[in-house]
Image (cartoon, rainbow, N blue to C red):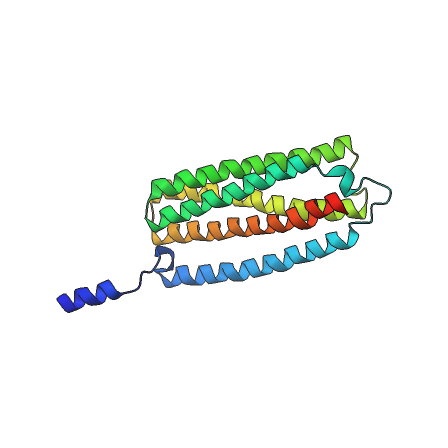
Length: 207
């Protein structure tokens, strides 16, 4: 008996989301999906950088971008990534209530980000006449930043459904896997935004 107990105590810790073959395969599949997403955003970034100077006499990035607005957006998304990480920490403790609380906070921050971004787009269109068809630069900008915003909106809906499942079922191998995967997705969007913040907004304020 003591030998069996010793073997069990020496067994490496395995996160709940990796405890089943189905969970491991789905997580692997999601990493592959993120690889495809990297290709997608790389193409959008490349397109934007190529057409950045093609304004066709319309508003330029220097004229449009407001440092205060995109700094607030960045702050909201960075904090949401941190709170999402705290949700994953509670997952390791199998604490359903803790996961739900931190995911709800993440959702609220994400909603704040989307609200700011929609306001930004509306302001550009109504006050500056900067619409997606005005120039190649604006087409590249709206497609890149809008695609990211659409991903964040999808993440909000996805996270909401997982919170509902957690409230009903608690922490199981299935819900743990879903929490872990949506966390990967959210952190990925945060990394993409850092590139947008740098390559689009900061660079656009200078060039």
